Structure formats: structure tokens, C-alpha cells
Length: 406
Image 1 (cartoon, helix red, strand yellow):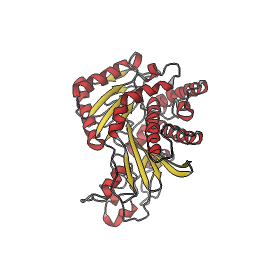
Image 2 (spheres, rainbow, N blue to C red; image 1 turned 90 degrees about the vertical axis):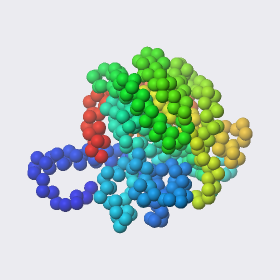
Image 3 (cartoon, one colour; image 1 turned 45 degrees about the vertical axis):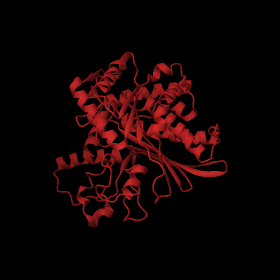
Image 4 (tube, helix red, strand yellow; image 1 turned 90 degrees about the horizontal axis):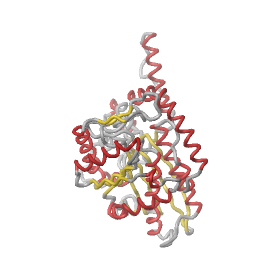
């Protein structure tokens, strides 16, 4: 970090400044920030990491291009506040937007042809926080742990993009840390929750089109009240562009039977076909097709169960795209090498999302990495669960202070 001027602070203030800088450094050294620099500095759209491929195409082909500063998606522009003083045309090339999340690109081969797979997760800065200090929605409809995950397949000049989103249950709710393993869930009034959900649904459908919400909460036990409140509020809101799909993950997949997730895929298959995905030939041509809807998944933390389901849906769509390109036969599934590559990317993404929100690697990644649930994976989940308990009860406050400062 480069100081803009020599320090004239008192010893007391210098101590406070050192603590603040320590918070910045701790956040930056997590390795969760990414940026992209354009080959042509004059081109902002088309190389904008804060946007999905579809939004980048829209910006590039817009008849009324936005101001270069406003061309960035404020949800994912993490250093926007730090860059405010550079909002002048002569300084625009000093502005490099940072996203917080995960980026991974791999090259693979099928049927003698190579292709690339790119995975980008963008964590929203609008209700940034840690697991227990940020839950649910605020009055504007921003939700905690909101992540847009984009899977981009490139076969020569052909580009495919699929976007999914996740986020905390869009109600006003909280869990106050009290040293219990599962702090009690506290919900706000139905009127407040209805307003927050409507605001959230309005925002997401304006951005993504139609939306199917997949709630993976338990429909009995500790999560029952939150699951019921979500369903009842969605029923009252009756948003014309939102369909709510409850799916009790733990009950359906009980006994490590994760193959039962095929039931969810069958249930939402019409929406998968209707929403589609983005497709274009080359970087400058008009899109061949657009993604017109999005799947929004959540569980209690919107981490572990959510990551598994997003992986299953992404693989389902990727299989269709590879078959369309002739890289897979009509009934052919992934080869072992491609399965390993895909699973590794998805499991690493799950770990990255979990580290940002909960402080540990994700749970259930043995299934994401290998395609099956194992006893060793369950033991690792137990270890990470204990570690989460310690971090969330004793260290989350400082991490939250750092995010608020940023």
C-alpha cells in the first residue's frame, strides 16, 4: 500500500491506523480478489469482469453506451468506494475493478477437439459479511452471501455461458451468536419480510428475467420455521416472474443417496429448457441465443447444499452444450478426465465461496469432486463444522469489521 502523504497522526491514531490497515491486508491476502486488464485500454465493455458474458455483449452493442464508470456492475465492483477519487476521464486507466470470488480456467479435449471451460463466481458487495453477522435480506432486498456464478464454454469461436445465482433466504432474519452450535433463528414481521422479498425478486427479475427459487432447507426440525416462512411469504408475494421450488435436500438424499438429486433436475427440467443459456459466435457478432431466466438456489448458509445443486445443474447444461457441438454423442456422458476436471473446478469454487462467508472449506465436496458421498468426506465435514463453530463464535467480528471498512 502506498501512502498518499506523510503521516501526521498522533501515536494513538497511528495505532488505530495500523489496525485498519491490518484489516485491509487480511482481506486482500485471502486471495479472493480478481481483476482483468483489457488488451485495448479504450475498450471497457467486453473485458469487464464485473459483468457476465451476456451483459458484456449487451454493453458492447448498446446504441447508448454508459459512462465508463457506470459501465461496471456496482454489485461486484468491490473497490468502487476506494476508486471514487479516480472518477475522472484522465484517470480512468488507473481504475481496475476488483471482483471478490473465484476464477478458474481449464482446457480439455473431447473427440480430438479442444475446448476451454471458465468458471467465475462474483460475490456481491451490497450486503457483504460473515456467516452469522450477515443473514437474510435488508430493506432494499439485498441479501447476504449473494453470488453470481458463470460457467463459460468456448469451442473455437463459439461461446456458451450459463449463469446461476445463490443468496441467503430473502427474508429479514438473523442468528445471534450465543455459543450454541445452532443459534436460534429470529424472523422479522410478515409485513417487513414481504417487502424485503418483493424488493429482492423485483431486482433479480429485472436483471435476469424469470427466476426459479430452489430452497434446499430442511422441511422439519431446526430449519422448518424458516423454510415455511419462505414458502408462505413467496405465496403472498405471488411475483409473476418467480416460481418457488422447495426441495428438502437432506431428506431426499438421506443415507448419502445423492443420486436422488436427479429428482430435482426432473422437476425443474421445463425451466432449464425455457431459461436456456447465452450463445454467440465470435466476440463481435450478435448473440445466437440469450439466457432469459435464472435458477436461484439457497440452503441455510447458501454454501454446501447449494454448491452441490448448482454443480448438478451446471453439468446437466454443459452436457447438452457439448452434445450440440458434437463433442459428446447423443447418449454419451463425460469421459473420466473431463469428469475430474469439471468436479475439481466446481469443488474448488465451493471451497472459495465457503471460505469467504464461513471461514472454512465447503462441506459435501467429496460428492462434488468424486460424484459420490463417502465416509471420509463425512469425517472432513465434521472437522470443518467444528472449525466453523470456533471461527464464527470468536473471530467473526474482526472479519466483519474489515468488510465494513472496505
